[in-house]
Image 1: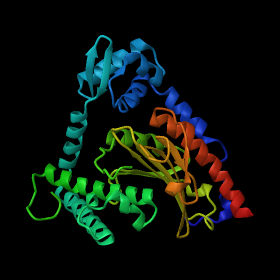
Image 2: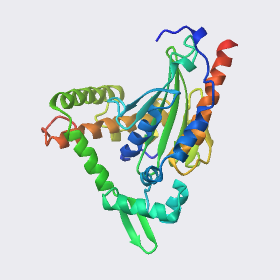
Image 3: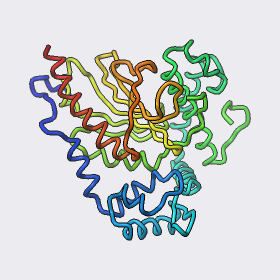
Image 4: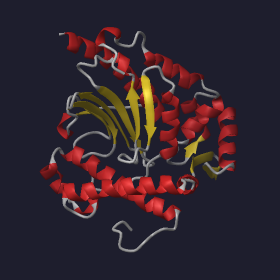
Length: 176
Length: 145
């Protein structure tokens, strides 16, 4: 860890080119899957083919398979369009949370609750929504404050989802 | 930036991205949804590529949401003082949806309008990674001068 600066130095080659090549040279099903994860609105096969850099037939085949297993929804048939199936991703998340063992669950929940507590002290309100965007500037740079409050909201969402995953939702613990 | 905090993170994409980057030579390790940043993946960058006396650690934090928004921050820790910038895609009253907050502080007023590729994968490989490579070289120049 404590290598002296003499033994250190900048990257010997441009790693960004290698990363670009790794993405472009990945198998077509992986490229289509990566693209599928970003289909926030109904998208035509031809556009997916272009973004994943594969043939239309190949894109269609992989998209249909992703729709079969529930990752995507086929929105229209002619022309064929696909978008993310948000309920699948929601299910996957709750499923993952429910697989935590009791210790992992308790540890994570405990740490999240102390994060939540620290935010309440910092901003002196109970929830991030109580702060008017027009007041962000009073706490520092407006956008940094917005992002910080976003993170606080994320902490609270995680607490809620964790509890939901255990049907453990005691009354009066602050986060509903 | 309208005071709403109800965006849904694109966790599947973030996990996939973290696992892709974990095996990159310039990445030291990746953390998925750390407890203090539950919407983010944190990509710690290879320490060998930075002069330790100047930069104690450097990392990239990525947030991606199902409304298409993203925030990609690059942060250097100069032994307690943060040097950072951020690539953003979100609605803004002052900038285009795609914009960049310039270093060293990445404040709101440091924004510059940009236009990024549609896909976050390409934003990372074509915008962020080349920038980081350049920056790693520049850091040595700053350190030596």
